[in-house]
Length: 87
Image (cartoon, rainbow, N blue to C red; front, side, top):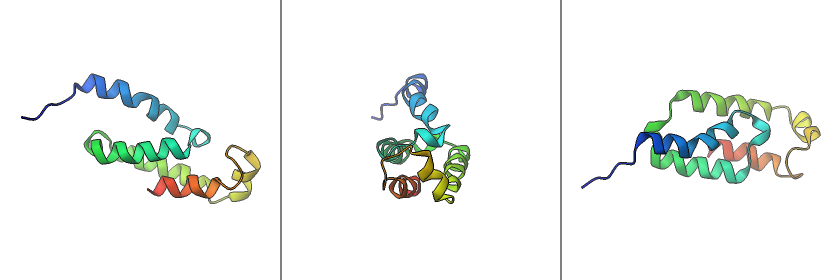
């Protein structure tokens, strides 16, 4: 027998993740890895807007001088964060 979690519970649990995805400066390797796992489990809960937002963030990494100058991530982690967006 299949057990489903209530929609409200799932929405409450994923809300903090979605709030961090609004801004590319809040992206972390841990967040992106968790999102990858979450998408594998709950892919039907997300629409194409999430993918569009991730592509928008990824586009910011096409200007590495700006990304590095912002000093948001530990030096050298910038490419890892960009790669994790793909994962």
